[in-house]
Image (tube, rainbow, N blue to C red; front, side, top):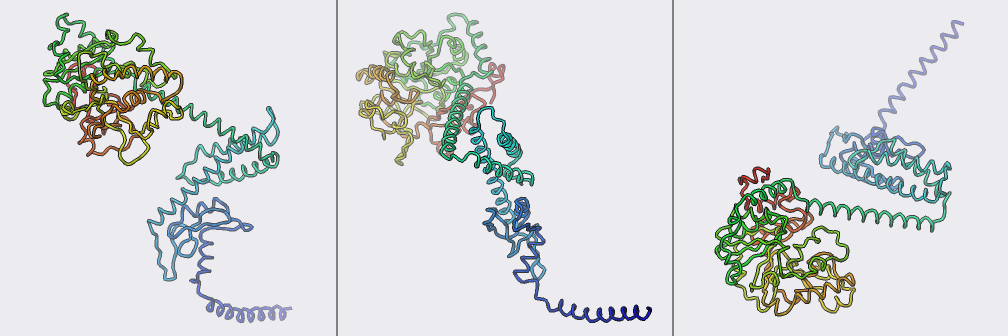
Length: 563
Protein backbone atom coordinates (compact mmCIF):
# COMPACT_ATOMS: atom_id res chain seq x y z
CA UNK A 1 0.00 0.00 0.00
CA UNK A 2 2.78 2.43 0.94
CA UNK A 3 4.62 1.52 -2.26
CA UNK A 4 1.59 2.31 -4.45
CA UNK A 5 1.14 5.74 -2.81
CA UNK A 6 4.82 6.52 -3.23
CA UNK A 7 4.64 5.50 -6.86
CA UNK A 8 1.74 7.87 -7.53
CA UNK A 9 3.61 10.79 -5.99
CA UNK A 10 6.66 10.11 -8.13
CA UNK A 11 4.52 10.03 -11.28
CA UNK A 12 2.80 13.35 -10.39
CA UNK A 13 6.09 15.08 -9.74
CA UNK A 14 7.49 13.80 -12.99
CA UNK A 15 4.44 14.99 -14.91
CA UNK A 16 4.74 18.45 -13.26
CA UNK A 17 8.38 18.84 -14.32
CA UNK A 18 7.49 17.86 -17.88
CA UNK A 19 4.48 20.17 -18.23
CA UNK A 20 6.05 23.25 -16.60
CA UNK A 21 8.84 23.77 -19.21
CA UNK A 22 6.36 23.28 -22.05
CA UNK A 23 4.05 25.88 -20.56
CA UNK A 24 6.88 28.38 -20.11
CA UNK A 25 8.06 27.82 -23.66
CA UNK A 26 4.58 28.45 -25.07
CA UNK A 27 4.15 31.68 -23.10
CA UNK A 28 7.50 33.06 -24.25
CA UNK A 29 6.68 32.37 -27.91
CA UNK A 30 3.17 33.91 -27.99
CA UNK A 31 2.61 36.72 -30.67
CA UNK A 32 2.87 40.33 -29.44
CA UNK A 33 -0.30 41.69 -27.86
CA UNK A 34 0.30 44.98 -29.59
CA UNK A 35 -1.30 43.71 -32.76
CA UNK A 36 -4.38 45.51 -33.89
CA UNK A 37 -6.80 42.60 -33.45
CA UNK A 38 -5.68 41.74 -29.94
CA UNK A 39 -5.65 45.36 -28.87
CA UNK A 40 -9.22 45.51 -30.07
CA UNK A 41 -10.03 42.41 -27.98
CA UNK A 42 -8.28 43.98 -25.03
CA UNK A 43 -10.14 47.22 -25.60
CA UNK A 44 -13.46 45.46 -25.81
CA UNK A 45 -12.77 43.67 -22.56
CA UNK A 46 -11.63 46.81 -20.78
CA UNK A 47 -14.55 48.86 -22.08
CA UNK A 48 -17.07 46.48 -20.63
CA UNK A 49 -18.82 45.80 -23.95
CA UNK A 50 -20.04 42.33 -23.06
CA UNK A 51 -21.92 40.66 -25.86
CA UNK A 52 -24.97 38.59 -25.14
CA UNK A 53 -26.27 36.42 -27.97
CA UNK A 54 -24.70 38.72 -30.51
CA UNK A 55 -26.32 41.93 -29.09
CA UNK A 56 -24.95 44.76 -26.93
CA UNK A 57 -27.26 46.70 -24.61
CA UNK A 58 -28.09 50.31 -25.49
CA UNK A 59 -27.23 51.47 -21.99
CA UNK A 60 -23.75 49.97 -22.27
CA UNK A 61 -23.20 51.71 -25.61
CA UNK A 62 -24.31 55.03 -24.18
CA UNK A 63 -21.84 54.57 -21.33
CA UNK A 64 -19.04 54.03 -23.81
CA UNK A 65 -20.03 57.05 -25.85
CA UNK A 66 -20.21 59.37 -22.88
CA UNK A 67 -17.08 58.16 -21.13
CA UNK A 68 -14.91 57.48 -24.17
CA UNK A 69 -12.58 60.31 -25.11
CA UNK A 70 -9.70 60.00 -27.52
CA UNK A 71 -10.61 58.85 -31.02
CA UNK A 72 -13.11 59.14 -33.84
CA UNK A 73 -16.74 58.16 -34.18
CA UNK A 74 -18.12 55.37 -36.30
CA UNK A 75 -21.61 53.97 -36.50
CA UNK A 76 -22.67 50.45 -35.53
CA UNK A 77 -25.14 49.75 -38.31
CA UNK A 78 -26.85 46.92 -36.44
CA UNK A 79 -28.06 49.28 -33.72
CA UNK A 80 -27.86 52.68 -35.47
CA UNK A 81 -25.99 53.93 -32.44
CA UNK A 82 -22.66 55.81 -32.58
CA UNK A 83 -19.72 54.03 -30.95
CA UNK A 84 -16.32 55.52 -30.20
CA UNK A 85 -13.20 53.93 -31.64
CA UNK A 86 -10.08 54.93 -29.76
CA UNK A 87 -6.71 54.57 -31.52
CA UNK A 88 -7.91 51.47 -33.33
CA UNK A 89 -9.49 49.99 -30.19
CA UNK A 90 -12.65 50.44 -28.24
CA UNK A 91 -11.83 51.90 -24.87
CA UNK A 92 -13.49 53.20 -21.74
CA UNK A 93 -12.47 56.27 -19.80
CA UNK A 94 -10.55 57.79 -22.71
CA UNK A 95 -7.17 56.29 -21.77
CA UNK A 96 -5.51 53.62 -23.94
CA UNK A 97 -1.98 52.35 -23.55
CA UNK A 98 0.03 52.00 -26.76
CA UNK A 99 2.73 49.43 -27.11
CA UNK A 100 5.29 51.86 -25.68
CA UNK A 101 3.07 52.53 -22.63
CA UNK A 102 2.08 56.09 -23.59
CA UNK A 103 -1.39 57.37 -22.49
CA UNK A 104 -3.05 60.30 -24.28
CA UNK A 105 -6.31 62.19 -23.77
CA UNK A 106 -7.31 64.73 -26.40
CA UNK A 107 -9.50 67.47 -24.92
CA UNK A 108 -11.05 68.53 -28.22
CA UNK A 109 -12.03 64.94 -29.01
CA UNK A 110 -13.62 64.68 -25.58
CA UNK A 111 -15.89 67.57 -26.45
CA UNK A 112 -16.80 65.94 -29.76
CA UNK A 113 -17.74 62.65 -28.12
CA UNK A 114 -19.90 64.47 -25.60
CA UNK A 115 -21.66 66.14 -28.51
CA UNK A 116 -22.24 62.70 -30.02
CA UNK A 117 -23.69 61.51 -26.71
CA UNK A 118 -26.03 64.50 -26.61
CA UNK A 119 -27.08 63.80 -30.20
CA UNK A 120 -27.88 60.17 -29.34
CA UNK A 121 -30.00 61.29 -26.39
CA UNK A 122 -31.77 63.84 -28.60
CA UNK A 123 -32.60 61.13 -31.14
CA UNK A 124 -33.97 58.95 -28.37
CA UNK A 125 -36.13 61.83 -27.17
CA UNK A 126 -37.54 62.26 -30.68
CA UNK A 127 -38.13 58.52 -30.85
CA UNK A 128 -40.08 58.56 -27.58
CA UNK A 129 -42.17 61.53 -28.76
CA UNK A 130 -43.01 59.63 -31.95
CA UNK A 131 -43.92 56.58 -29.90
CA UNK A 132 -46.36 58.61 -27.82
CA UNK A 133 -48.01 59.99 -30.97
CA UNK A 134 -48.37 56.52 -32.47
CA UNK A 135 -49.74 55.09 -29.23
CA UNK A 136 -52.31 57.88 -28.97
CA UNK A 137 -53.31 57.23 -32.58
CA UNK A 138 -53.87 53.53 -31.86
CA UNK A 139 -55.98 54.44 -28.82
CA UNK A 140 -58.26 56.38 -31.18
CA UNK A 141 -59.00 53.10 -32.96
CA UNK A 142 -60.28 51.46 -29.81
CA UNK A 143 -64.07 51.57 -29.31
CA UNK A 144 -65.25 54.23 -26.84
CA UNK A 145 -65.15 52.94 -23.28
CA UNK A 146 -62.98 49.98 -24.26
CA UNK A 147 -61.00 48.58 -21.37
CA UNK A 148 -59.17 45.77 -23.13
CA UNK A 149 -55.73 44.60 -22.11
CA UNK A 150 -54.13 46.31 -25.13
CA UNK A 151 -55.81 49.65 -24.35
CA UNK A 152 -54.65 49.46 -20.73
CA UNK A 153 -51.14 48.61 -21.86
CA UNK A 154 -51.03 51.50 -24.35
CA UNK A 155 -52.16 53.97 -21.69
CA UNK A 156 -49.58 52.62 -19.26
CA UNK A 157 -46.76 52.86 -21.83
CA UNK A 158 -47.78 56.42 -22.73
CA UNK A 159 -47.60 57.47 -19.08
CA UNK A 160 -44.20 55.79 -18.65
CA UNK A 161 -42.70 57.46 -21.73
CA UNK A 162 -44.15 60.84 -20.81
CA UNK A 163 -42.63 60.47 -17.34
CA UNK A 164 -39.25 59.72 -18.89
CA UNK A 165 -39.56 62.70 -21.26
CA UNK A 166 -40.37 65.01 -18.35
CA UNK A 167 -37.07 64.11 -16.67
CA UNK A 168 -34.83 63.92 -19.75
CA UNK A 169 -32.72 66.61 -21.36
CA UNK A 170 -30.41 66.45 -24.37
CA UNK A 171 -27.28 66.78 -22.22
CA UNK A 172 -28.32 64.05 -19.80
CA UNK A 173 -27.55 60.37 -20.37
CA UNK A 174 -30.55 58.07 -20.59
CA UNK A 175 -30.82 55.51 -17.83
CA UNK A 176 -31.18 51.77 -18.35
CA UNK A 177 -34.73 52.05 -17.08
CA UNK A 178 -35.55 54.62 -19.77
CA UNK A 179 -34.09 52.45 -22.51
CA UNK A 180 -36.06 49.50 -21.20
CA UNK A 181 -39.30 51.49 -21.34
CA UNK A 182 -38.54 52.44 -24.96
CA UNK A 183 -38.19 48.75 -25.84
CA UNK A 184 -41.38 47.91 -23.96
CA UNK A 185 -43.23 50.60 -25.89
CA UNK A 186 -41.87 49.20 -29.16
CA UNK A 187 -43.25 45.79 -28.26
CA UNK A 188 -46.63 47.25 -27.33
CA UNK A 189 -46.83 49.23 -30.57
CA UNK A 190 -45.98 46.06 -32.51
CA UNK A 191 -48.94 44.29 -30.89
CA UNK A 192 -51.16 47.29 -31.59
CA UNK A 193 -50.11 47.27 -35.23
CA UNK A 194 -51.08 43.63 -35.47
CA UNK A 195 -54.46 44.40 -33.86
CA UNK A 196 -55.14 47.41 -36.12
CA UNK A 197 -53.54 46.66 -39.51
CA UNK A 198 -55.62 49.17 -41.55
CA UNK A 199 -52.96 51.64 -42.81
CA UNK A 200 -55.45 53.91 -44.58
CA UNK A 201 -57.47 54.37 -41.41
CA UNK A 202 -54.29 55.06 -39.47
CA UNK A 203 -53.26 57.73 -41.99
CA UNK A 204 -56.66 59.38 -41.68
CA UNK A 205 -56.41 59.42 -37.90
CA UNK A 206 -52.92 60.93 -38.03
CA UNK A 207 -54.06 63.66 -40.43
CA UNK A 208 -56.94 64.51 -38.11
CA UNK A 209 -54.58 64.66 -35.13
CA UNK A 210 -52.21 66.90 -37.08
CA UNK A 211 -55.02 69.26 -38.02
CA UNK A 212 -56.27 69.46 -34.42
CA UNK A 213 -52.76 70.13 -33.15
CA UNK A 214 -52.23 72.89 -35.70
CA UNK A 215 -55.52 74.49 -34.70
CA UNK A 216 -54.57 74.39 -31.03
CA UNK A 217 -51.18 75.94 -31.86
CA UNK A 218 -52.81 78.69 -33.92
CA UNK A 219 -55.22 79.48 -31.08
CA UNK A 220 -52.41 79.65 -28.54
CA UNK A 221 -50.35 81.90 -30.83
CA UNK A 222 -53.30 84.26 -31.20
CA UNK A 223 -53.79 84.33 -27.45
CA UNK A 224 -50.09 85.02 -26.88
CA UNK A 225 -50.17 87.81 -29.45
CA UNK A 226 -53.25 89.36 -27.84
CA UNK A 227 -51.70 89.24 -24.36
CA UNK A 228 -48.48 90.80 -25.65
CA UNK A 229 -50.46 93.62 -27.25
CA UNK A 230 -52.48 94.01 -24.04
CA UNK A 231 -49.28 94.44 -22.05
CA UNK A 232 -48.05 96.99 -24.59
CA UNK A 233 -51.28 98.99 -24.35
CA UNK A 234 -51.70 98.76 -20.57
CA UNK A 235 -50.58 101.90 -18.76
CA UNK A 236 -47.71 101.21 -16.33
CA UNK A 237 -48.30 102.10 -12.69
CA UNK A 238 -45.85 105.02 -12.86
CA UNK A 239 -47.61 106.59 -15.86
CA UNK A 240 -50.97 106.20 -14.17
CA UNK A 241 -49.63 107.96 -11.09
CA UNK A 242 -48.16 110.72 -13.28
CA UNK A 243 -51.48 111.30 -15.06
CA UNK A 244 -53.40 111.58 -11.79
CA UNK A 245 -50.81 113.98 -10.38
CA UNK A 246 -50.93 116.15 -13.52
CA UNK A 247 -54.73 116.26 -13.49
CA UNK A 248 -54.57 117.50 -9.91
CA UNK A 249 -52.04 120.12 -10.93
CA UNK A 250 -54.17 121.24 -13.91
CA UNK A 251 -57.34 121.84 -11.95
CA UNK A 252 -55.33 123.64 -9.31
CA UNK A 253 -54.32 126.29 -11.84
CA UNK A 254 -56.22 129.50 -12.44
CA UNK A 255 -58.14 129.60 -15.73
CA UNK A 256 -55.83 132.13 -17.37
CA UNK A 257 -52.77 130.03 -16.50
CA UNK A 258 -54.19 127.06 -18.40
CA UNK A 259 -53.60 128.85 -21.71
CA UNK A 260 -50.41 128.41 -23.73
CA UNK A 261 -48.42 131.43 -24.91
CA UNK A 262 -47.93 132.35 -28.61
CA UNK A 263 -51.43 131.16 -29.46
CA UNK A 264 -51.47 133.35 -32.57
CA UNK A 265 -48.68 131.22 -34.13
CA UNK A 266 -50.64 127.95 -34.30
CA UNK A 267 -52.12 128.73 -37.73
CA UNK A 268 -49.15 130.55 -39.29
CA UNK A 269 -48.37 128.66 -42.55
CA UNK A 270 -44.82 130.10 -42.63
CA UNK A 271 -43.77 128.09 -39.57
CA UNK A 272 -42.83 124.42 -39.22
CA UNK A 273 -45.89 122.54 -38.00
CA UNK A 274 -45.58 119.12 -36.35
CA UNK A 275 -48.51 116.89 -35.34
CA UNK A 276 -48.52 114.14 -32.68
CA UNK A 277 -51.62 112.07 -31.81
CA UNK A 278 -51.34 110.34 -28.43
CA UNK A 279 -52.71 109.77 -24.94
CA UNK A 280 -49.23 109.12 -23.49
CA UNK A 281 -47.72 112.13 -21.67
CA UNK A 282 -44.15 110.83 -21.46
CA UNK A 283 -44.10 109.73 -25.11
CA UNK A 284 -45.21 113.18 -26.26
CA UNK A 285 -42.69 114.84 -23.95
CA UNK A 286 -39.82 112.90 -25.57
CA UNK A 287 -40.99 113.68 -29.12
CA UNK A 288 -41.27 117.40 -28.32
CA UNK A 289 -38.03 117.62 -26.32
CA UNK A 290 -35.92 115.70 -28.84
CA UNK A 291 -37.26 117.68 -31.83
CA UNK A 292 -36.62 121.06 -30.19
CA UNK A 293 -33.23 120.08 -28.76
CA UNK A 294 -31.86 119.04 -32.17
CA UNK A 295 -33.48 121.83 -34.19
CA UNK A 296 -31.48 124.73 -35.60
CA UNK A 297 -34.63 126.89 -35.80
CA UNK A 298 -36.59 125.84 -32.72
CA UNK A 299 -38.45 129.16 -32.56
CA UNK A 300 -40.15 128.30 -35.87
CA UNK A 301 -41.56 125.02 -34.56
CA UNK A 302 -45.27 124.64 -33.73
CA UNK A 303 -46.43 121.40 -32.12
CA UNK A 304 -50.05 120.28 -32.44
CA UNK A 305 -50.78 117.51 -29.92
CA UNK A 306 -54.16 115.83 -30.18
CA UNK A 307 -55.24 113.61 -27.29
CA UNK A 308 -58.62 112.59 -25.86
CA UNK A 309 -60.74 114.45 -23.33
CA UNK A 310 -59.75 112.07 -20.54
CA UNK A 311 -56.02 112.81 -20.96
CA UNK A 312 -56.38 116.48 -22.03
CA UNK A 313 -55.87 117.91 -18.49
CA UNK A 314 -52.77 115.79 -17.81
CA UNK A 315 -51.24 116.52 -21.22
CA UNK A 316 -51.89 120.25 -20.83
CA UNK A 317 -50.51 120.36 -17.29
CA UNK A 318 -47.25 118.70 -18.32
CA UNK A 319 -46.45 121.26 -21.00
CA UNK A 320 -47.65 124.16 -18.84
CA UNK A 321 -45.28 123.07 -16.08
CA UNK A 322 -42.55 122.16 -18.61
CA UNK A 323 -42.94 124.71 -21.44
CA UNK A 324 -41.21 123.71 -24.70
CA UNK A 325 -39.69 127.13 -25.31
CA UNK A 326 -38.82 128.64 -27.70
CA UNK A 327 -41.30 126.52 -29.69
CA UNK A 328 -45.08 126.93 -29.73
CA UNK A 329 -47.47 124.22 -28.62
CA UNK A 330 -51.19 123.59 -29.02
CA UNK A 331 -53.11 120.77 -27.33
CA UNK A 332 -56.59 119.68 -28.42
CA UNK A 333 -59.02 116.91 -27.51
CA UNK A 334 -60.18 114.68 -30.35
CA UNK A 335 -63.79 115.08 -29.17
CA UNK A 336 -63.55 118.83 -29.82
CA UNK A 337 -62.37 118.58 -33.44
CA UNK A 338 -65.15 120.10 -35.55
CA UNK A 339 -64.23 119.04 -39.07
CA UNK A 340 -64.13 115.26 -38.63
CA UNK A 341 -66.92 113.30 -40.36
CA UNK A 342 -69.79 112.22 -38.14
CA UNK A 343 -69.07 108.55 -38.83
CA UNK A 344 -65.32 108.86 -38.11
CA UNK A 345 -65.24 106.20 -35.40
CA UNK A 346 -67.48 103.68 -37.15
CA UNK A 347 -65.76 104.04 -40.55
CA UNK A 348 -62.79 101.94 -39.47
CA UNK A 349 -64.64 99.18 -37.64
CA UNK A 350 -64.51 96.12 -39.88
CA UNK A 351 -63.05 92.62 -40.10
CA UNK A 352 -63.33 92.13 -36.32
CA UNK A 353 -60.12 93.87 -35.36
CA UNK A 354 -58.46 91.99 -32.51
CA UNK A 355 -55.16 93.84 -32.45
CA UNK A 356 -55.37 96.57 -29.84
CA UNK A 357 -52.82 98.66 -31.73
CA UNK A 358 -55.29 99.10 -34.60
CA UNK A 359 -58.43 99.94 -32.64
CA UNK A 360 -57.19 103.33 -31.43
CA UNK A 361 -58.82 106.41 -32.95
CA UNK A 362 -55.44 108.14 -32.99
CA UNK A 363 -54.15 105.75 -35.65
CA UNK A 364 -56.88 106.72 -38.14
CA UNK A 365 -56.84 110.43 -37.36
CA UNK A 366 -53.91 110.87 -39.76
CA UNK A 367 -56.20 110.36 -42.76
CA UNK A 368 -58.03 113.62 -41.93
CA UNK A 369 -55.12 116.02 -41.61
CA UNK A 370 -56.51 118.51 -44.22
CA UNK A 371 -59.78 118.71 -42.26
CA UNK A 372 -58.10 119.07 -38.87
CA UNK A 373 -55.70 121.80 -40.05
CA UNK A 374 -57.61 123.70 -42.76
CA UNK A 375 -55.33 126.77 -42.64
CA UNK A 376 -52.03 124.87 -43.06
CA UNK A 377 -50.25 123.98 -46.29
CA UNK A 378 -47.82 121.39 -44.91
CA UNK A 379 -47.54 119.37 -41.73
CA UNK A 380 -45.01 116.81 -40.47
CA UNK A 381 -46.67 113.92 -38.67
CA UNK A 382 -44.62 112.12 -35.99
CA UNK A 383 -45.75 108.96 -34.21
CA UNK A 384 -45.51 109.15 -30.43
CA UNK A 385 -43.02 106.24 -30.28
CA UNK A 386 -40.20 108.08 -32.08
CA UNK A 387 -37.23 110.07 -30.89
CA UNK A 388 -35.64 112.75 -33.08
CA UNK A 389 -31.85 112.68 -33.15
CA UNK A 390 -31.04 115.37 -35.72
CA UNK A 391 -32.45 118.58 -37.20
CA UNK A 392 -35.59 118.06 -39.32
CA UNK A 393 -35.48 121.54 -40.84
CA UNK A 394 -34.05 120.24 -44.11
CA UNK A 395 -37.29 118.34 -44.82
CA UNK A 396 -39.21 121.59 -45.08
CA UNK A 397 -36.91 122.79 -47.87
CA UNK A 398 -37.42 119.72 -50.08
CA UNK A 399 -39.36 120.33 -53.31
CA UNK A 400 -42.06 117.63 -53.20
CA UNK A 401 -42.74 118.02 -56.96
CA UNK A 402 -46.48 117.51 -56.64
CA UNK A 403 -46.30 114.48 -54.34
CA UNK A 404 -48.54 114.42 -51.28
CA UNK A 405 -46.50 112.25 -48.92
CA UNK A 406 -42.77 112.36 -48.13
CA UNK A 407 -41.75 109.12 -46.40
CA UNK A 408 -38.88 106.68 -45.98
CA UNK A 409 -39.21 103.30 -47.68
CA UNK A 410 -39.13 100.13 -45.60
CA UNK A 411 -37.42 97.87 -48.17
CA UNK A 412 -33.93 97.87 -49.65
CA UNK A 413 -32.66 97.55 -53.22
CA UNK A 414 -31.79 93.84 -53.03
CA UNK A 415 -35.04 92.79 -54.73
CA UNK A 416 -36.20 90.92 -51.63
CA UNK A 417 -39.98 90.39 -51.54
CA UNK A 418 -40.13 91.43 -47.89
CA UNK A 419 -41.85 94.80 -47.31
CA UNK A 420 -43.54 94.87 -50.72
CA UNK A 421 -47.20 95.76 -50.90
CA UNK A 422 -48.09 92.28 -52.16
CA UNK A 423 -47.45 91.10 -48.58
CA UNK A 424 -50.18 93.33 -47.10
CA UNK A 425 -52.76 93.61 -49.92
CA UNK A 426 -54.91 90.77 -51.20
CA UNK A 427 -53.90 90.44 -54.85
CA UNK A 428 -56.35 87.58 -55.37
CA UNK A 429 -59.04 90.28 -55.49
CA UNK A 430 -59.40 91.75 -59.03
CA UNK A 431 -59.83 95.31 -57.77
CA UNK A 432 -56.45 95.13 -56.00
CA UNK A 433 -54.67 93.29 -58.83
CA UNK A 434 -55.80 95.85 -61.39
CA UNK A 435 -54.83 98.95 -59.37
CA UNK A 436 -51.47 98.11 -57.80
CA UNK A 437 -48.08 96.64 -58.58
CA UNK A 438 -47.31 94.01 -55.97
CA UNK A 439 -43.57 94.65 -56.10
CA UNK A 440 -43.95 98.30 -55.07
CA UNK A 441 -41.93 99.04 -51.95
CA UNK A 442 -43.82 99.76 -48.74
CA UNK A 443 -43.16 103.17 -47.23
CA UNK A 444 -43.38 103.70 -43.48
CA UNK A 445 -45.61 105.69 -41.17
CA UNK A 446 -43.91 107.34 -38.22
CA UNK A 447 -42.31 110.37 -39.85
CA UNK A 448 -44.26 111.77 -42.82
CA UNK A 449 -44.36 115.24 -44.34
CA UNK A 450 -47.71 115.88 -46.06
CA UNK A 451 -48.50 118.56 -48.64
CA UNK A 452 -52.02 119.37 -47.51
CA UNK A 453 -52.75 121.65 -50.47
CA UNK A 454 -51.99 118.86 -52.94
CA UNK A 455 -53.96 116.41 -50.79
CA UNK A 456 -57.02 118.67 -51.02
CA UNK A 457 -56.55 119.22 -54.75
CA UNK A 458 -56.49 115.46 -55.44
CA UNK A 459 -59.32 114.83 -52.95
CA UNK A 460 -57.54 111.82 -51.48
CA UNK A 461 -59.95 111.80 -48.53
CA UNK A 462 -62.73 110.82 -50.95
CA UNK A 463 -60.47 108.04 -52.29
CA UNK A 464 -60.03 106.89 -48.69
CA UNK A 465 -63.77 106.58 -48.16
CA UNK A 466 -64.18 104.57 -51.37
CA UNK A 467 -61.53 102.09 -50.27
CA UNK A 468 -63.08 101.80 -46.83
CA UNK A 469 -66.42 100.94 -48.38
CA UNK A 470 -64.84 98.28 -50.59
CA UNK A 471 -62.99 96.93 -47.54
CA UNK A 472 -66.28 96.28 -45.79
CA UNK A 473 -67.47 94.19 -48.73
CA UNK A 474 -64.40 91.93 -48.87
CA UNK A 475 -61.05 91.21 -47.28
CA UNK A 476 -58.84 93.43 -49.46
CA UNK A 477 -55.95 94.02 -47.06
CA UNK A 478 -54.41 92.95 -43.80
CA UNK A 479 -55.40 94.55 -40.52
CA UNK A 480 -54.06 98.00 -39.71
CA UNK A 481 -53.51 101.47 -41.09
CA UNK A 482 -50.43 100.67 -43.17
CA UNK A 483 -52.26 98.88 -46.04
CA UNK A 484 -54.86 101.67 -46.19
CA UNK A 485 -52.10 104.26 -46.37
CA UNK A 486 -50.34 102.40 -49.19
CA UNK A 487 -53.56 102.43 -51.23
CA UNK A 488 -54.59 106.03 -50.56
CA UNK A 489 -51.14 107.48 -51.27
CA UNK A 490 -50.20 105.05 -54.07
CA UNK A 491 -48.26 107.00 -56.74
CA UNK A 492 -48.47 110.07 -54.48
CA UNK A 493 -45.45 109.33 -52.26
CA UNK A 494 -41.90 110.61 -52.63
CA UNK A 495 -39.24 108.30 -51.16
CA UNK A 496 -36.77 109.53 -48.57
CA UNK A 497 -33.37 108.03 -47.85
CA UNK A 498 -33.78 105.34 -45.19
CA UNK A 499 -31.32 107.14 -42.92
CA UNK A 500 -34.04 109.67 -42.17
CA UNK A 501 -36.23 107.07 -40.47
CA UNK A 502 -34.87 103.94 -38.74
CA UNK A 503 -37.55 101.32 -38.00
CA UNK A 504 -37.91 98.28 -35.78
CA UNK A 505 -36.49 99.36 -32.41
CA UNK A 506 -39.54 98.01 -30.59
CA UNK A 507 -39.46 94.53 -32.10
CA UNK A 508 -37.43 91.68 -30.63
CA UNK A 509 -37.65 89.68 -33.88
CA UNK A 510 -36.49 92.57 -36.04
CA UNK A 511 -33.10 92.47 -37.72
CA UNK A 512 -30.09 93.49 -35.63
CA UNK A 513 -29.52 97.24 -35.96
CA UNK A 514 -25.86 98.26 -36.03
CA UNK A 515 -24.37 101.11 -34.02
CA UNK A 516 -23.54 102.87 -37.29
CA UNK A 517 -27.20 102.82 -38.38
CA UNK A 518 -28.28 104.17 -35.00
CA UNK A 519 -25.80 107.02 -35.14
CA UNK A 520 -26.63 107.95 -38.75
CA UNK A 521 -30.42 107.90 -38.30
CA UNK A 522 -32.33 111.16 -37.95
CA UNK A 523 -35.46 109.61 -36.40
CA UNK A 524 -35.51 106.39 -34.37
CA UNK A 525 -38.85 104.57 -34.45
CA UNK A 526 -39.80 102.10 -31.69
CA UNK A 527 -42.55 100.47 -33.70
CA UNK A 528 -43.66 97.19 -32.19
CA UNK A 529 -44.82 96.11 -28.73
CA UNK A 530 -41.57 96.80 -26.86
CA UNK A 531 -42.07 100.52 -26.33
CA UNK A 532 -39.28 102.46 -24.59
CA UNK A 533 -41.51 103.50 -21.68
CA UNK A 534 -42.27 99.87 -20.82
CA UNK A 535 -40.17 97.46 -18.76
CA UNK A 536 -40.24 95.05 -21.69
CA UNK A 537 -38.34 97.54 -23.89
CA UNK A 538 -34.97 96.67 -25.45
CA UNK A 539 -32.27 98.29 -23.26
CA UNK A 540 -29.84 98.71 -26.17
CA UNK A 541 -32.29 101.03 -27.95
CA UNK A 542 -34.03 102.54 -24.92
CA UNK A 543 -30.93 104.57 -23.98
CA UNK A 544 -31.57 106.88 -26.94
CA UNK A 545 -35.07 107.60 -25.64
CA UNK A 546 -34.42 108.21 -21.94
CA UNK A 547 -31.82 110.95 -22.58
CA UNK A 548 -34.63 113.36 -23.53
CA UNK A 549 -36.44 113.09 -20.18
CA UNK A 550 -35.47 114.90 -17.00
CA UNK A 551 -35.77 112.15 -14.42
CA UNK A 552 -35.10 114.67 -11.65
CA UNK A 553 -38.51 116.17 -12.29
CA UNK A 554 -40.44 116.21 -9.01
CA UNK A 555 -43.50 114.48 -10.49
CA UNK A 556 -41.39 111.69 -12.04
CA UNK A 557 -39.62 111.17 -8.72
CA UNK A 558 -42.94 111.13 -6.90
CA UNK A 559 -44.30 108.43 -9.21
CA UNK A 560 -41.08 106.39 -9.12
CA UNK A 561 -40.41 106.81 -12.84
CA UNK A 562 -36.71 106.36 -13.44
CA UNK A 563 -34.22 105.25 -16.07
